Image (cartoon, rainbow, N blue to C red):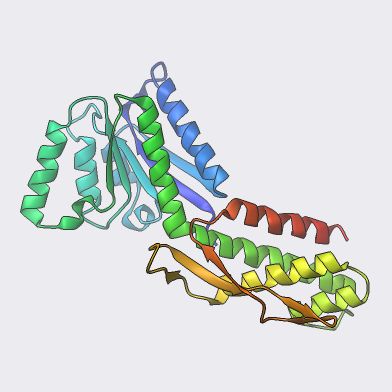
Length: 276
């Protein structure tokens, strides 16, 4: 599962080592935001939009999660031209910023809309004024949060759960089963518990994580008619007379839930099991 978050950023300040401090601060701020979301930020820096169009082929462009560009690039092609050129091949998430006026930007967007009659022109496009740097950074953070929560976070969580539960299952099997024995994850947990390899609390946590993993792997995301958010349903385990059942209460995992706590929860459990 892809865990990188790829950003192309275009600004002619990259060509000026003495005057790019604010831009570096901006990039570092975005890197921290992405890292806190559980992704690995990868930035590609360009001082010319034409270089992007020649260096990155069509297939690679579609792997970019976000394009960011200054409008005033110091050449004949402005940032808004770069956006209009990119979207000829595909729809992309794009942030355009500038410290100067917006009349020329509006004129070019209006001309494109009139010529191509495509209302999707603005569907993934965000303009941010750099006249206020705090707003510039805050708006960019808002866009990144939106992209990750709406399009990537469930997939990232699926990958994490698949990887961690596989490690846990394999390690428990090495402790609880004979070398030629294979059991389902649920059975392996129970055998490890019966052999006192794990205690009751760990047993319950493992079954809870197992059922969340099953839901992430096999359940489709559902859109709530009320909140308009996507969610996944999963059941909690029920324990009765030393047996485990998969018909406990139904829980909801929304796309904007606190995945940080859930990620930490499974990583802590993984670390505990691998120390056994």
